Image (cartoon, rainbow, N blue to C red; front, side):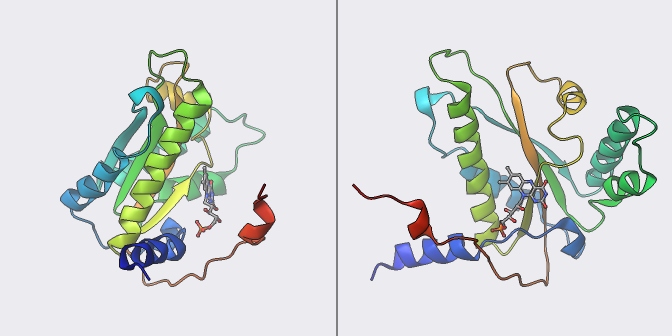
Length: 193
Ligand SMILES: Cc1cc2nc3c(=O)[nH]c(=O)nc-3n(C[C@H](O)[C@H](O)[C@H](O)COP(=O)(O)O)c2cc1C
């Protein structure tokens, strides 16, 4: 019995993806988001490159982000593939969210650290953010759909060609309770020697 492990287990296992449509519009104070993002900085980092970077859209800026995402979709989708419904979904994706945090990997200047490790470190940082949110009763969604992983999005963020966008984190509050689901038990994913 170890109370710290029990608390950590609870936070990890009860963390759930809550899509922004299931958030309730209640706003998170910016200070709270700053506190959560501070946890990102404690992710493990090979060579101390600390490659995680975040761009925050708070409160009324969320709508600006969603408009920008929708417009990138419109501008960079061939007319015959463009769907008005998809545009509308992107435009209104954040209507009930409090913050959108774009997360990307900034490639450092240590070529001996392979890009996969920089992405891994940034993913750990993102998970820290999600767990911090969970611990504070904040709903979170890590999304990579739409334009997020595409070149125009990267261009808009003015990223270096070696950098990598990892996703948009939508934060808010919810009344929704979601039960976790995994397709296979962890035992099926571990080999002991
Ligand atoms: C890198 C990454 C990208 C993701 N992108 C999306 C996405 O674009 N759309 C989506 O519905 N969920 C996305 N998710 C969330 C997963 O759907 C979610 O984690 C999965 O369903 C498991 O649910 P849980 O997070 O509640 O355990 C993403 C998760 C990760 C790690």
